Length: 208
Length: 208
Image 1: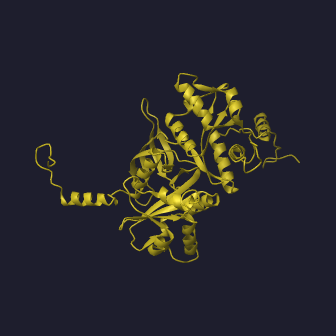
Image 2 (image 1 turned 180 degrees about the horizontal axis):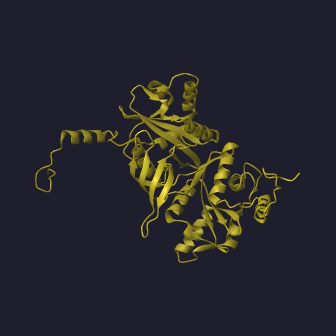
């Protein structure tokens, strides 16, 4: 039976809708940002009891607040502050998990200008304290998301600081990172990857 | 040699200053808020490589932003959002650490109204995922800070929800929690306590 509009006319998918529904089947990105995909994944992990990972609020320097009678306080003047840490952190199997997510429109390399010195510093500290620390890198044109351990990012960062490349070649990311295929639920199943990378001794003997 | 002002007059400590300097000797709270004490402690832990714990930014719902030419974006309208998690989290020895800090002017009991249902929910999730989760409770009149494992808070919370006490008696906190004496650096050495509580098998055999 064909789908009909309330006025009785049959629903004919437009070329755009057909394209969208084709895209849906491969679970590729439906116009969602990387942030939305990660938030959806984190909500899924939380509701299924898999992990507790949250995005940190955007840091804001509040300058002026109005307290009107009988209604909520209104922030009248505030400025965006640069974050001193990464955007996401939480707990998985008791371990501390910390990551940053970035996307680029570049097709062949990931520019290191997406990261700030203090974010790298923070990730180094987490790494030293034996936390699980990585980056999610999305190539938005091809809609591919890679997970790369922070230690690998550090080495590229050092290279840059010593006058070397200011980006990571995509083929290096393909080799040194792990592609995370889009799935329906969660959208970006990064926990599956870190389970293999950091908990293999407990599970499938991935490294043995 | 007496200390002198730039105009040559000798500096005579006022009663207030003398009191302050006496208080300093016992490392008690010098008019600092609990939040300031914790931030100082976290900075100390970070700089000494002991732990990486940060306060999360205040969550704000941004409604209207102005982008003036040649200067920083100005947030013109925003509202405080209720936090969906606790205020502090981070990593210590690879483990996830998560806590909330609250203070009361009450002398005999800690009102549970200091916590929100969703904060308790969050702490329960962290607890289930084997994270280290606790609260720091300060009695501001006597200037005492206690660390109490979140699981104990949950039981008091349940009691309240079943129609019982809406606060935790101070003597219960003294028994079920651990007093953290003020020290110079860090101001509130909560890592020392969690080291004993959660890592005792690695260190001194505290529980054995």
